[in-house]
Length: 384
Ligand code: NI
Image (cartoon, rainbow, N blue to C red; front, top):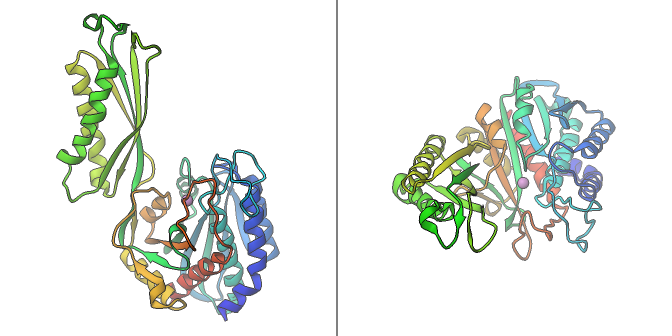
């Protein structure tokens, strides 16, 4: 019954996905994507509010029977990169690509919405469809929450297509599922001079090098070995010539944690270490912590609901609880922090692993059916 309804709207959802894929838009610029979603919702007579956090949409489907208010969330944004032009229905916009599958999340949420809307007369509770901008940068979920999209919401579900897992397999995780992807910057200031006379200079390159190495001792010596923390320096800039000691070196990097208490402590430990090292060499360092999304923590009860929902239509070998979290970040974390929620992965790997954020990223449209059915089943299971 649900499958038939999904099948009847599948071609429409597939066209929507391909149209969004060909015209990708990055964070907070999802204007045409917003128009495409609205055209779909209009056609299905689903009411919505648009323009929340610039390009976000909140659609509402009122069931005829009393029940809980369930929010289903999709992200809409693409990435600032070129797509391999040989991919099927490749991006027509230079420097823009849906390389993470958010086009699929959006189309699958539309397909789930059309299906739930068709079931309205027998549907319990209210379903909210949240299309959010800017998952990849700046966190579009946060301004949408500030605008009130979670008011009255009892629980929320979200999912991500997952390139390293087998096609059609759904993964669940209770507790921490994804890391907080915070960033940091360190400005190391020394005293410049001639490379042949280091004794009259203070070398910020040497200080920065000591800092890069010492930062790893926070992970190994200052945090419990049972806690996962990653500190990676991804940028190191300084100097202009082989024989000049520069005035300044700038380091930038990322801090990943899976526990909000550890997350709060690590930047202070880094600041102390960075400032202390610079001082001990006669230099000066400024540490700047750039917080991003919180740790994504799934509610255990809502995760059980999602697991049971998947069991309603998938075989046992297609459903799995993850043993370990992922050190990547996901701004669904803001939603999960505000209301009981769970996030899921749906595998899309057919013959070899698919890398997200890669010019060759591509997934088969058939996954829209599984993802939409999963979301529909979550709504039904939540109101059991
Ligand atoms: Ni993504």
